[in-house]
Length: 364
Image (cartoon, rainbow, N blue to C red; front, side, top):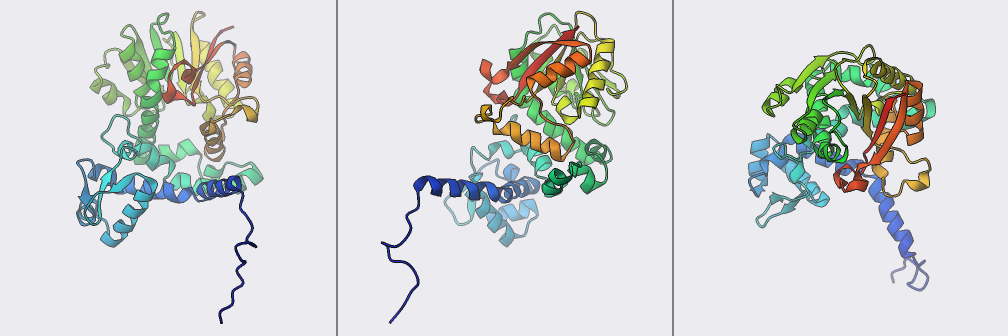
């Protein structure tokens, strides 16, 4: 005779379907770091590029990627679970899916550098100590690595190149939205503060032939800009200037653009940077900030969870934060500007920029 402690069907508690769905969602969130690392490993090994020409077998992929075949077989199964690759007929043969296509390095909408940066070891370790960051209020990245975020990358040229590439990928996605969603007809010269590899000005100058541009960044940050602008055929319309915007901003522009810059810094640094812009901007000039905006009420966030994730990432890494429109207006006023415009680019049909807004100020 067999006995069991399992309840009979009539005795089993009935699970609320909504509760079951919530639990499944919780599992997905709580263990989301694991799929992220599966995808990161695939990009680091070059699997998406190796699958660019079509389906390939595990043994062939192991040889081309320099990987251990049994381990790679397991990684490919994991990737299939994420939807990045799919089985393709033969044993251990896989094909890259449309979802996985942006993980290639050779496509215009590549996210490969973003994955390598944000799921890489430096970020991974800093996020792993989030509880201590929240408990103490100290900067997690600096606590883990011993130096501030931007100093860390400035000391590592290869990783700084990856950082610039990742920021350039984001700009390629949202730059066209700025080019189409803001009136540039009034200005002649755009200065991109923190312009990195010139990706944003390439978008703006390509869309508006009357514009001239200046990429302004730290020497390490703008190292790739000249070559990139030359390849885009824009070298004669855009110069590259090295400098520290917290010390002095390059003169000569009538529009000063800062994309994903101010949210990296605390209020004191932001006021300093804006005041340095005010010192060189003409009376009919403007500053234009492009980055996520935090709604004043949490219940107003809606589906914009990327804004919260960005804010948490800034808490962990740079010590900056995502600000509200009212907070920007206050910072503008403290630096001698008057807030004149706020616009969500996604509200004007630019869905690729769903988390980005533009905030404009003019000399007061």
